[in-house]
Length: 113
Image 1 (cartoon, helix red, strand yellow):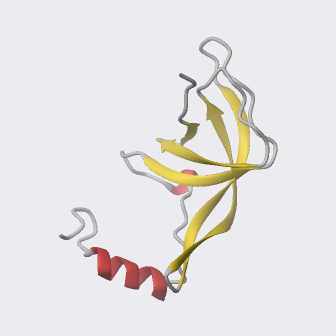
Image 2 (tube, one colour; image 1 turned 45 degrees about the horizontal axis):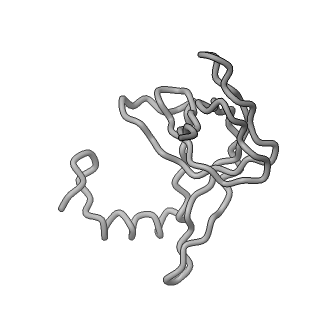
Image 3 (cartoon, helix red, strand yellow; image 1 turned 30 degrees about the horizontal axis):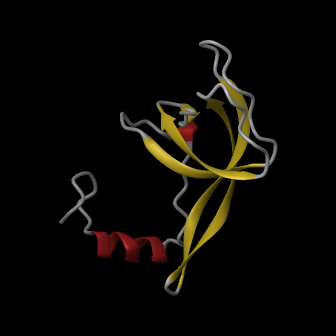
């Protein structure tokens, strides 16, 4: 099945990533799309918790999955972003997390049950 936006099949997209160095950069400052992007990130300091309707904040470094044979290796993009925490609990330091890019805002999308 072809990608409805770029017109590449999954196999062709994988080949293109290998050709261009396997470094898909996710960059909020240069993103002009109307859809949500999900990224893997690592935070060294964690994030504060939400207080009422005011979101907590933290910083994180974006990562991607490099291809190494049959393995996938977490690899830094050396791009640091500020993210906002929707949970009233803090985000622990030295943790990997998933961030959503909504417009130009990175959101840590978890909420305690």
